[in-house]
Length: 213
Image 1: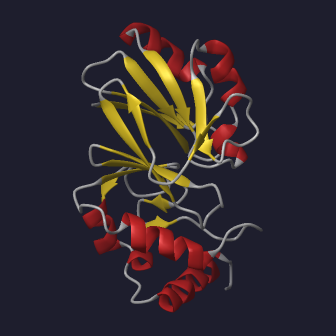
Image 2: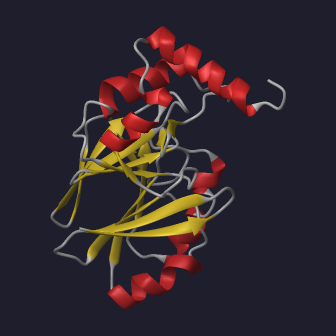
């Protein structure tokens, strides 16, 4: 499998282009950067992009969706619940998508946002805003929930192989990617002893972000 990473968008966003070893079928994770950033590579590699995989529908992750759909033939948007996009594929927890011979597993991970999902393929985990390098996503918006996020992260993601490499939705950490084992070892938010402990750690983290807090 090959993975290309493109950074830009509104807040150090990442868009990923992934293709299996058999090629040329490919998938894009999040429409967070202008299509012009990825167009040349798609043409040079002669890729056929089958899916635009959306990790969640916050605007910075879907900003260029219409542009991608207009520029690429035969691409289908895929997101949890289908969203508001015409002809979008409605994803469900535990579903598997095929991109050539590459299998992509859908993991519903609400908490940061109700329709948040992660995409797992060959020990590579595309986490959107559910999990970053060094911490989890935040839960400060109207529809976010720290307890949901705890269950998503601790019961679904932290049970994966420690060799799993995290590909987050933003470049917020000290490096772009990290293994799950390394992330657990270095992040207090991934070391909670219980759900209540996690909620307390999240609140403490938010206070630490507030000047004078």
